[in-house]
Each structure stands twice: as C-alpha cells, then as structure tokens.
Image 1 (cartoon, rainbow, N blue to C red):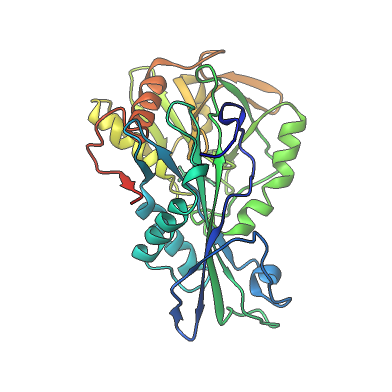
Image 2 (tube, helix red, strand yellow; image 1 turned 180 degrees about the horizontal axis):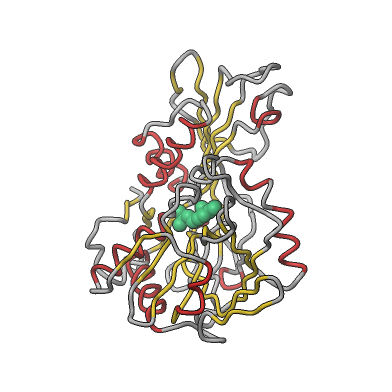
Length: 338
Ligand SMILES: Cc1ncc(COP(=O)(O)O)c(C=O)c1O
C-alpha cells in the first residue's frame, strides 16, 4: 500500500505507476501496453492538437467493503466514447477493449486505489485522440487510446454541502444541433472562460440554458441538472444538446427502485422556484446540492441553504452504498478488477 495521506486527497492529478496505451493504424488496434512515463512523443501535426480531434471519459474504481476493487459501469462510458468517436470521425474503441483497458490499468495501479473507509476512489480517465499527422482539416489516419488513473479523495468530508449556481446569459455551452451530447475535448475548452467568470463572482457552478431561446434548462458545465418536485418526483432534462450522464442514469434507476416517480422532460427556467431540491450530478462528486440560482441579479431559492434535501440524500447514500459494496448491487453495475 502506498504511503499516501488518503484523507487529505482532493481532486487533482497525481502520477501513479503507469497508464495503458493503444495505437490504431491500418484499420486495427494493437494489443496495448502499460507505459510508465506520463509523457509521450506526439507528432507536431497530430489532428488532436490542431483540430481538436479528441474525446475523453471519466469513471471511477472503488475499493469495496469486502476488499474487492470494482469499476462502476465502464460499459456505459465505452458506449459514450464510441458515440463521440463516430461524431468526430475517429476510430472506435470496441466496448470489450475499453473495459479490459480500464481493468488492466487499475490492476497495475492497485496500491493507488484509496482503501475502503477513506471515502476516496480511483479516478479513471480514458482518452482517445487523432495522433496521425494531417495538414488539411481531415480525420487522422492514426489514433491513440490511453487510460490514466489517479487517486482522488472524498469530496464531502462531513455530509453533502450545498452550493450556489449562476446562469451566465452571455454564454452558451452547446448549439441545438452541435456537439453538447458528446464528450469532445473542445466542449470543455470553451467552457473554461465562463467557468472562471462564475468562479470569480463566487459561484462554484454555472448553469447553461438552451442556446436558441435561453428559456429551457440544459445542464451545468460538467454535470447534469436534476430536481425533486414538492410532491417528490425526480425530474431531469430531456435535450439533444446535453451530455447523457451515467450518474443521472444510475440515480434514475435507483429512484425507480425506491418507488420515486421519474420524469425526463424539458424544464423551463421559470420552474426553478417550484422545486423542493435541486442538484448537479456527475461522476466526480455524484450529487452537488444547489441551494440557489442567480440570474441577471435575481436570486432564486432552490433548496435548503446548508446540507441537502432528504430525497437527494437518500439517492446519494444508495448509489455510494452500491459503489462501496455496502448495499446489494442488484443491477450488476460493479465490474470487478480481477
Ligand atoms: C457536460 C457534462 N455533463 C454531465 C456530466 C456527468 O456525466 P457522468 O455522470 O457520466 O460523469 C459530465 C461529466 O462527464 C459532463 O462533462
């Protein structure tokens, strides 16, 4: 076991033993290899560097109560990366290869998986990019797929903490027929500037509205929007320009297991004051309760000022319970690292 202060880990990069790297050339992927150095030579004309032909994913491996390490729903990330690859004309990574890559790299870095009870996990970051040279705007003839891992700490040290969100009407995240539904690198480059603006104004998260009318809720910069109505229904956004979150998908399935009604539909911004609880959801923190949303100088209350509402808390405990092997994994979401 590594000499790491697990309890003080945050969400930042730390070198592990190695990453796994594959190359696609002449129509096929190689067998992949574990590489120790976190640096790699890259062609100066690689399409990823010039034209943003790059996609990434994010998932986690957990050390469970029984000591076994497992990945959470890696096949869903494989499917989402394949969708990004198709839209950006990259070689697709077959699902079995994707899951095997995650298992191999976690296995080679087991001593970096935070032990059960520390609240931490191993963040797993698959990356696919055009590594072949091209000077005109065209797809590469060579692709690199790699998976790196890094240990991350418990986000909430003492229960879920509510945050304030802001709508920045001067910025859009995704066009109606654009690339908001896939995880292409460029989506994130263009979100950095508004994100810093929000941060400087004292808001950890920014909420985007639909680009056409600025009337409908879309999602936060790196997480989906979800709400609980006053009569206890789980509501989340239906839109073709948001990223289909695997956390949101899982929370919806858990809500149904718990007898909580689920609605996936367009949500008008005007509805925010009618909700009992609002949150952002994603792999990094699972659920971030949102207590208020500011828009154009007006503050809209959206939930308890501190802590978290009861329905979100139940959902959070249920998903974490499955991930850490404290509750039965009835859906078969945990994939063991053997
Ligand atoms: C734009 C965006 N929305 C939502 C999510 C949450 O998705 P997931 O739950 O699969 O992490 C992410 C993170 O990947 C994201 O970048």
